[in-house]
Every structure is written in C-alpha cells, then in structure tokens.
Picture (tube, rainbow, N blue to C red):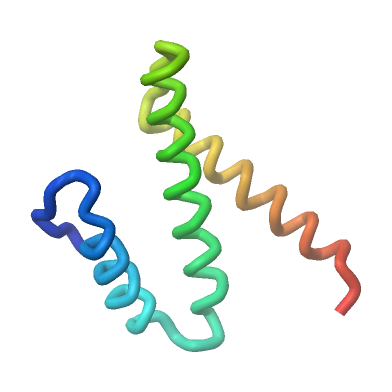
Length: 83
C-alpha cells in the first residue's frame, strides 16, 4: 500500500496513488483490484457519514468485514450475469 503525506481532501494524491498501485497489478487482475479499491473507498465514505450524521462509530475490523461482505455480494451478483 502506498502512503502519501497529502492533506485531507487531496483527491489528486489519492488518484495518483491508486493509478501507481494499479499499474503494478497484472492486467488480467486489474479489474478485480479496482473493484476492491472502490469498495474500500465506498465503505470508508459510508463510515465517515455514519460518524458525522448518525454519531455511530465502527471499529476498523467492522468496516473491513462490511467491505468483505460487499465484495462477496458483488461476486455472487456478477456470477448471475450471463457472459
């Protein structure tokens, strides 16, 4: 994982780090990598909203479990789509 010292909200730094890391992933696995990264970001964003708007705080483990569940649901849904 690439850790960059960028100020919060520095979307260019996030995009650059993502692109740099994705370029190191084999081409045939890049779609899976990008999907995983999207679900991680999505769940972090949802946790931020829970904390700000609902005053609900989850542990890192709970967030990781929710992310894992989302990925598993996506895989199951994708297997139902005819190729």
